[in-house]
Length: 386
Length: 91
Image (tube, rainbow over all chains, first blue to last red; front, side, top):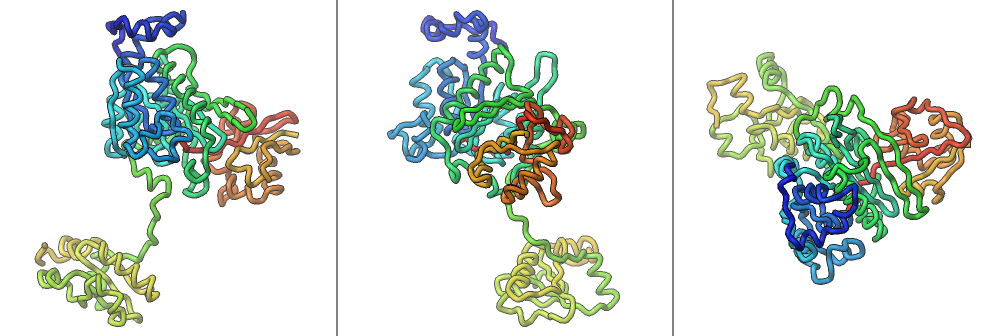
């Protein structure tokens, strides 16, 4: 971040005067703020105060990523928005409000969801990330993307009356990098165990308190003043007015930043957080084993669930029952010997087996792994591939 | 008598009690005593193998028990024990 050449207009100097006159802050810190690019992920409860304070403070470039539209139920806490914003994409309503607050800064909008596909490219463009999202998959996505791109992640989260703040993946001047979210929480809770704010509610002012702390930590990360929350974990209970700050440390078994990292690129975070239901496994047979059965003359039936025109091109001599008609023709499928079900690549036949097992309780069905294409490749290359 | 601070999301399993005094010498005993008195807490604190779930952190004073002696970490009379589950809200 090259900040020494940063200049201020007369209006800007007047605007930032109360910063510049703090001895520990000074013009240099203000220059660092103007040179900085901060990505705020989520422009809701936490994102509102973070964006308002960072814009007011003079952070030169603010990136905002959110795919949501302003809703009436947001106005209880998302102070970026007013009645006139309802129905408008959050990023657009946010930009309007922030630009009115400070016309001297640049605002970059991403009216999209942060995903494993776009996260690295977006985050690479920024110096600091402030995470104000509202679900575990995105929390882990932001964490991993920050670790992989080497960006500090100013973290905050809220639930009902409680808030948490920390600074993750922060590299100190001596080159030492502090803990990240996976050091603190190696895995997320299973879906449903910890309710979201949408389900469990949140005190409207809580994101204001916690988001302001997040903005303050972001400013400290940019300017290098004071001691950030890196290596510490702050929690606040608004109900009993209690604050606690814990020490946290890096763990050698962290899968992305430990001794032997296994995560080297972004993964499927929905699946990691158990949001995607894993389908019940079905029995499979390899094409080699099928060939063995054929050679040994083992008694079994082959069901081909492809379409008639595919069957015409090439087939294994099985009974043709297209997928759409498979449950209606369940009586044509043997129950007293093994049945190999196949299609072109193994997907449709897996679906057929699940339907048959579920509806008719078959327990003798084997899916041909890789389908007829694998059979041609590995057993009979002379057959026609299509 | 160590004091355990129960986080908001788990208070519904402790009759809305935020602070519970427990007579115990270690974290293991504390958790056992706690889940004995509030059985519904058990599945939220412990997995099937009886291990503390990985999205729950327990701090003794300012320190993570993973940096101390895990469940064997000793607790004293005036120790403050914090149970802090992962929360993800932001909107």
